[in-house]
Length: 400
Image (cartoon, rainbow, N blue to C red; front, top):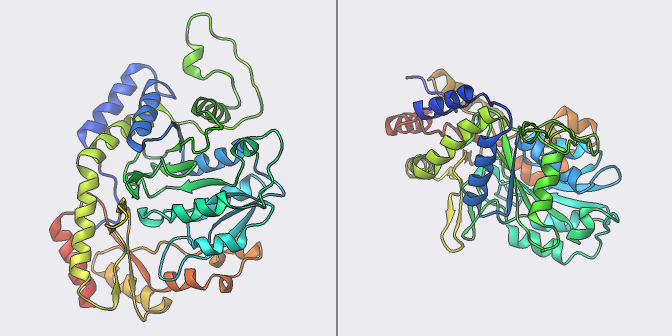
């Protein structure tokens, strides 16, 4: 038996929708992208949604929208994929890493509090594996912070406090205390990459929720859309209307819009996710937990907190094995691969990577993140797995 780690679940329905777009004569940003934005907005209970070519672009555009750049600091977790911190560097700001909480993959609000300075302009929490961060604590920190100093004439000034921008690459469909992720933070950037719960092959969407009442959703939508299309006053679809060729360039913007070809995939994927795919991911997660939870040295990832109505999107099954060091963990991965089972590690903490070591970050400053990483393995979790696959993966792991 050979298992794939994370293939996309594509059916004839997605294929037919893409064919429909190809035959329509309109394949770039257009009506299907607008429809996907509408559906994401409704699904997440957010006030605005803008589809882009990646979640990374989404985070960067939000930072640029708020005028965050050189001289500013943005706090994020040391335990995440590089994209989270890279967007901070792209805009010229300084990443400030907070450790995760002990025995958790999620950013520690207490360390956020310790790391805030008068230069802090944003916090980027990361919903690792699809389980939401402690947003009540994070918002308590930013709402009570007295160090915040906004740049005059920017949306920072309208917001009046540190921006909370969630890296929700993993967490579409997750709930925080009964609220859909996408409607909790000021902004949330979801990924639609090929391995994500909902895919457009490459792509993402930024949602906005008007937490303060000072920035209208219409303004946010228009500004993000303009940022993502060269700073142009009209998109290509608007320019096709008779007599509407003329446009202006308002500022030197960027090029990271979503195409209707990608949105075609997303429309069907989102429909299937709501109807069945999300439930199947939960079933697989529970099956792993039931089998592997019998061993005391297996630390099962969190799925749900019943008391608070916080629920994971079940994007990844990030298992930890007590007592293991990196070499032991790597040997487990090698032995399972020899049985035709691919495993992964999510993620190397950023200070272990050359880019961030060269910038002066040291892994010794984030002991909890290292302890989470050194004995962590990620098992295959996707909707093309059947129950026999889960049994095979689990028993093979137990056997070694």
